[in-house]
Amino acid sequence: IAARARVAGARRVTGGAVPSARARRVSADVAPLNRGHVARLNPVLLRWPRRSTRHPGAGVARLAPARASSEGDVVIYSFGDEGGTRVTDEGAAGESVAAIGGASDATSAIPGRTLASYWRDAMPANDALDKQILKLFVPAMLNFLIIPFVGAIDVFWVGRMGSAVALAAQGAANQVFQSAFWIISFVPSIIAPVVAKAAASGDTEEVQRATGEAIFVASLVGVFGMVLLTVFQAASLKIVGVIPGSDTAAAAAPYIGWRALTFVPAIVSTVGFAAFRGTLDVTTPMKITLVSQMVNLLLDPILIFGAGFVKAMGVAGAAIATSASEITSFTLYMSAMLRRGIITLGSLIRVPSWGNIGKLMVGGAAVQMRSIAQNVTFLAVMRAILTMDATGTAAAAHTVSAQMFQLCLIAVLALSTLASILIPQKLNAAKGEGGVEQAKICADRLLVWGFLLGTFLACVQLTALPALKFFTPLENVQAMARGPVLIGAMQMPLNGLVFVAEGLMQGHQAFARLAGGMCVSTTLMLGALKVWGHTVEGVWGCFFVFNVSRLAFGLRHHFWDGPLAPKKMHPPEKSNP
Image (cartoon, rainbow, N blue to C red; front, side, top):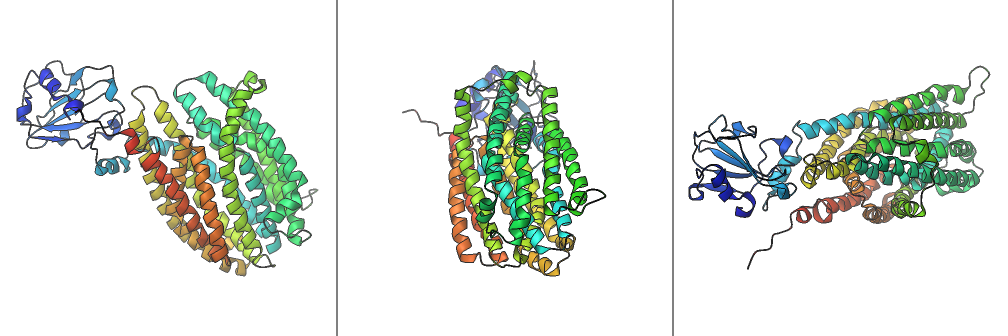
């Protein structure tokens, strides 16, 4: 404490009025008196009898007049500016407040910080950090919510066809496309933290270079994905259990064919979304998503059921409407990035060096491994569902349940993306606005937000059970979907923690750790499916195994061996012999 607080310095700045012999209690517990300053102020509380002397030359605003005790409090803060000592005016209750310390203390915590102090900082308090999270979260959530909402509209219109086979085909084909897309499109996951770091440090050229190179690599990957899905339509559907030549296969194949044609615009749009996220702009992507998905919303009934000279195309019509929205999104993102200076024409046409491409590919390999493992789980789930019965009832019930689940889960996903950009932003912000302590408090706060949000969404999903009839008029499908919806609601608080913990790991660019954890979790999930995956309810129950394993890896990184783990931030000080 003497080393951190420099009590002798306190005696000097108060003219000897604070003799250490009169100090009654010294507490090394961090007790932030103003949460807005907690990340850059390291308080050590010293108590001595109240004095009424007004210190000359006081220049620091009072931070905690309400915290004076009957004995009087002296609060010593390390500010992290250019050094020297500062002393506040006396508080309203007559306490003396001194600020002592230099830049070397800016990001260090006081040894002996207790669990209670970490917990206190993690709890929402409607302070500046909560307001920043809320300001970014609402438009990000709305942006993510638009897509599954429109997807639910797709299910609604396909469900109006009155065919369980059509619902099963749409669900299976969409799962194949989404799995292929997220396995291949590793670039957005890598580029968001890079852009966030560059934007926080004010390096516009680095933002333009990184985004331009990401678009270049994403376009090449998108061409590969388009060819892959076009050539191997039947084989890709067979992976999820669709029997070649069946009615389900006949309805699902055109869906994949149409979606494959817009693989490049879709993947470039995700890069644009990641770039805007990196600059902490989540409002522009929300507007773009709203406009593009309105195109899908308007075209769905026309192309599925036909209107005027447009003939009815069924499930294929839903795919064409989605593809039209992807092209709209691509156009809007490119124009917005050029207008905002996130990219330039030069950065778009400049071929990246092999070294930079190599860096993207190395990071992408870990992201891709994680995506493969994750989507192996989803494909295995779809295969288990499709092979339960030949009528398609189980698959239709799973499709409806998944849509309701995703409508709620998307809010948690939005919070996860904030974690992936706020952590690098906090770590690389200008002096006085960021640092390790601020990043730690932000990360802990986001975890608490994730749990509370998941609990709230569980209640929402439970109250939405009567809405099953709006997704399908088939009563047997409605009855079979009730169990998965209930199980999904029970998992929401767990998902809130899982998604935020993995978002924090993405912010630290710990992609290899994420991949390893996902591979282990997928292995456990496949084993669980063999034991319990013989009913729709059993399949959904297996997700508890999958998510508990993921959470264990995420919390281990955050609390034990990651950059923000307490033992990494505040290593024990070596005692002098």
